[in-house]
Image (cartoon, rainbow, N blue to C red):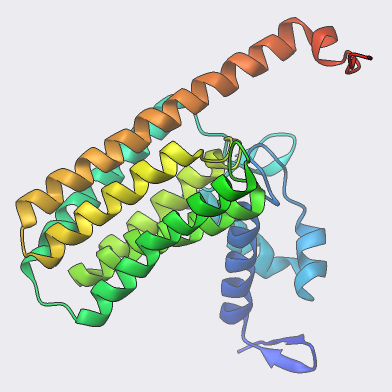
Length: 260
């Protein structure tokens, strides 16, 4: 089997392709490759110290999974989600996560898992306290990254407790696709953080009490609330874009400050 050289070590092609896949996926999740941006095989190969072959193969896999799309003139670009895409992704997420949380509530789980869920839920309250103490209106980029990490951790651990690795994989990919759009949205405000924490605590309590029907309904309500917020954000973003296209001179005006 042919191998490529990376940092003085010989790396199997499959390993390099997997590394390239994760590298690109992380860039998308972090917003370094925002929706609509084109990928450069040459730049990515340089980043990883590899040939362009594993980069091309990783891009092909990400295209098949819906993270990227091939365009005639620009090559592979990060997918630009439509309003209908968001609705369909949330429908998929709701179907799988609600089923999984019911299974988790019916099964056996460790006390340490519940403690970890409690810690992830309470991290949202920590962010709310920081926001209120700073007198800020909304979470900044760094704080939103922390929020998304603990929010993803909470939902991922619930899925793991269901014991179905395939559901976990699909849900994680679905949530990552949703996050491509979420990069554009404003940071959460204190009231939103309070609501999310309340939802998470109620879901956790239902799972801990072994009440699958309650856990499933609570999680369905939580996901539907998130969908409504995401669609509101999408509609706001589209209106902004429409205004920029219609009245570009308005957005190019210099900021005029009042003088005493």
